Amino acid sequence: MSKTQVSKFDELTYPAPRGTVLLLSCMDPRLLDDTVSFMNHDNLQNRYDHVILAGAALGALGGGSKKYKHWKKVFFDHLAAACNLHKIEDVYILEHRHCGAYHKVFNVAPELGDTEEEMEQEAALHRKYARLLEGEIADWAEEQKVNLRVTSFLMGMRGEVSLL
Ligand SMILES: [Zn+2]
Image: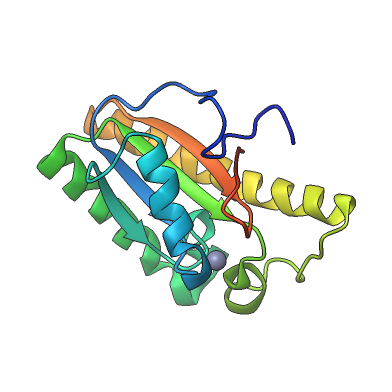
């Protein structure tokens, strides 16, 4: 287990959220209960707006394709609504392993297996898109004059969560 692991059994290793959070996650049905468990573990029960887009960060970036470009507007419109309605100060980007959207919808990478090397490649891929979205959210927040902190996570298929 890596030092950055923050499963429900571990201590938090990132700043605690300050109020209501906007959670961006993928639509994968296998992780719905784990996602709720993770948010409850973070003392966020009924304290988050939930935006679900296939591929999470990659989806919110428009999947790098013309076909899904409008998803970026959908995400940022929801972020604006969350800021207006609930004065959110934190955004969580929750990526997950074995995300079909990455290789079946947006085709940015082949399906990766469970060797150590493939898992590292997979984490790097999710980190890449999470960092890109973090940057776009920071630019947006500056423009809108709102104070947002973004934290990105990677969930495994058993619901274990690491910081990205
Ligand atoms: Zn997915």
